[in-house]
Amino acid sequence: MKTLDVTRTLYTVTDFVSWQKNKTLVLSPSFHRRPVWNPGAKSFLIDTIMRGLPIPIIFLRDQKTNLKTLQSKREVIDGQQRIRTILSFICPNELDDYDKTNDDFTIKRVHNKEFSNKGFRDLPNDLQRWILDYQFSVHILPSSVDDREVLQVFARMNSTGVKLNDQELRNANFFGDFKTLSYSLSTEYLEHWRN
Image (cartoon, rainbow, N blue to C red; front, top):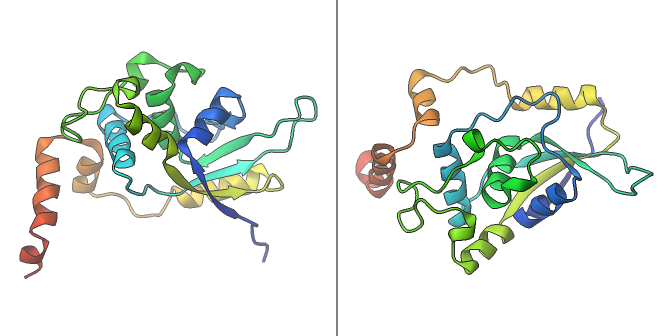
């Protein structure tokens, strides 16, 4: 049985911003769906990063070095919504297909009262640096992995065969004070609920 030689590493938000600026990041390969995250999901991700909490692993594939430009590119296999959210928050003008209607957002009060309704440039410098220095766990497939194998990996990551129930779908789609309070109370009184 053939196995993939996957490199496991860490990259910062700044790495992704630099790749996007240099046009060496392929953010939306043809097998990806369009951007679908709502402003609440985007705000929640930024708040997660601001708090230094972990997010799921990002999967990339190295592409063969371009012999004319002498640059290598990285293709996003899994993590497009997360990376796009971060790029649209920090440097929206670097997204070729930026759409203010769909991509523009600020931090929601329900996620972070102190920085609600703020964009990246509105945050204090030390917090901007904190966000830029945030590290992602990244798995990289080598350029020798062909498109067919990439599609198989992508399909496996995005199809568990278990359909979300109605409550899980609501939990994924809605953000607000009630949800935040519910999570807060459930963790604060965890031992009570267990007993």
